[in-house]
Length: 328
Length: 95
Image (cartoon, rainbow over all chains, first blue to last red; front, side, top):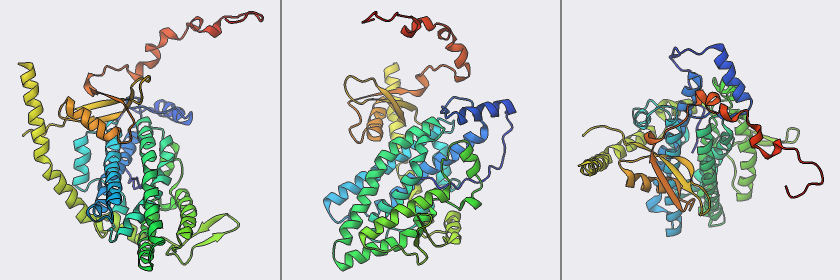
């Protein structure tokens, strides 16, 4: 679903022979809009930044299956259920495209999965919030996937080829997700007062966490400048957040529900909406592992991993046996 | 049971008859059949293909990016292989 720009400074700068000439030649390729491919030479820091970002993105897709999966058995109709099932399956697919892209950088799948399970790797803060009502499935599709699209469209032009190509695939599918979310909201808003209240409640709870998805303000975002120079990122966190607010406020007006921000107003002179201050303390708390569902999400992922162990082992045993028979 | 990671397979999709297979990504699988099934579920959920190839990643022999210039050098100075190399006077048609 999305990556959050949580990059923290790498602790160890691995000592490799990276001469100034090599770094300059690499930057020249980037500046010329050349794509970097898997086996090309790249600075270690570029590789590490990408591994961190792509794997964090992959983990977000995988963990993101949980808040949506929460409503699979309770979707209000068979049609809604089939659609939600397809969407959750897409999230798994997105995770797999992205793990596959990360692996081209020389990290193993087991290592990536291990880092998620151990809590070493981060995933998007948004998935640590609970989906309390059916309307939340609408809000997640509309807002969370909407924010994800804002962030991901520019990633289709990322300088790293395998990541960019995976993002093209993801973006095509993500727009189905956003539309189905909006359609759920629309149906609720055209329904009874009680249904409309559900939609309002979902917007009220998901609005601020959605804005947090874009990551810290530019002034606080340590790695933005380097990622921009490497053309991994094309727009800053604040630019993308502004764009999201501008398009989403209009959609909320159409739905007839209100964005929970008393400071929100349209600024004629800039042509943009100005909005209130984000609660960054809440953001930091969720990132630090203290959001409403962090513990539950990881426990559930761990349980799914453990419960699947016998299947993986059986498949491996079968494959080994067949290989041995074929060799005999 | 060993903690051995399943091998990686590269996935190629033919989007419709008449077109070549094109690289889409990769999947892990315990064996060839599972690689095909996983590739189908991962890369063709929206009828993206009519044919799939999967090949063990470690079976692919690739040119070395660091040697790109030298490796492709023989083609560098043979511009006469291109039709635009030849000057055809005005008035000559269908050539």
